[in-house]
Image (cartoon, rainbow, N blue to C red):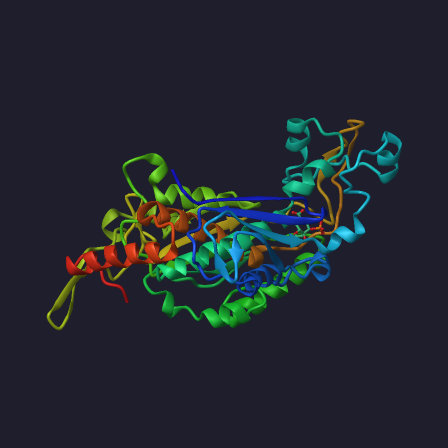
Length: 403
Ligand code: EPS
């Protein structure tokens, strides 16, 4: 069982979003500024709607950090919703008369693709707002804050997590299936792009595609790719189904709103290939007298048998187009059972560039949990020493080499 646990709370137009991270060792240097960097990255992205002009996400530590270091106690992070000022009575926790709430107007036209319809069925709500406030992807701001804490812990183990966008609305970069070296990707160009895609021509085309979709009242999905590098072999496990890191990563990424598919390495491309063209040969590497086992390819995406191989962990996630459309699809009013069109609300045209940052957070959470299960440590010093000692043992046996 994982000793790291992250949970979020918050409604999209409520007072704020919170994240609690339990199980982070003591002594980890942590500032709100470094968390805010990821919050700002999640907010950016061409194709976002007007809500992002209202919000400037900043995190506040409510618990677990003192004088810039973690205490080993649960860390509570809070991000205020700027838009709450416009929703104070609509989102009030205080009891209200039936008359007042019906004056505010009920939302009764479920949007195909959103949680609206199944949510009212499940919870017995009569106002879809009671579903969408929590189902909204606003919740991911809390995940990104908690994920930034996990990334900071992984940094102590020499691990970096970054993601880039590969496609939006059918505009794709020619992404290589050689997933060996994160250093071959221009991560500065990824950050400079308004859509998180380092290829300038593709990035411009994606923006044009977003403009076109906005004009047509449409929304767009896409694919992003998460890289975790500096990872040592043997993290995760094959002994029990819940140890398998690929299963945990897939589950975590698929839990991001609108993510409908996840693959490790070249997965879907490999399904049509013969084995000899898919598996990564195990090679003997030399440097002077030094010999070690390594790979020249990483089609496995850094995971074999549910464990890290020591090559970068590379995952791809497919995001469906956002369900809120300004030219809505057919729907049925849940109050009158009359055929109608789905509710239209302010929304984003696409959130793939933002989802890439959420993908980093979820991958960092799963990986940090797997590292903590393997290496333990109540203090970050003990954790880092345990990682270093294991890695030194691997290097001594020639089973891996850190670059
Ligand atoms: C969302 C709808 C939009 C998005 C929101 C997710 O919000 P609103 O209804 O207030 O316009 O902007 O995403 C965020 C607020 C965010 O921070 O990412 C939805 O329905 O999921």
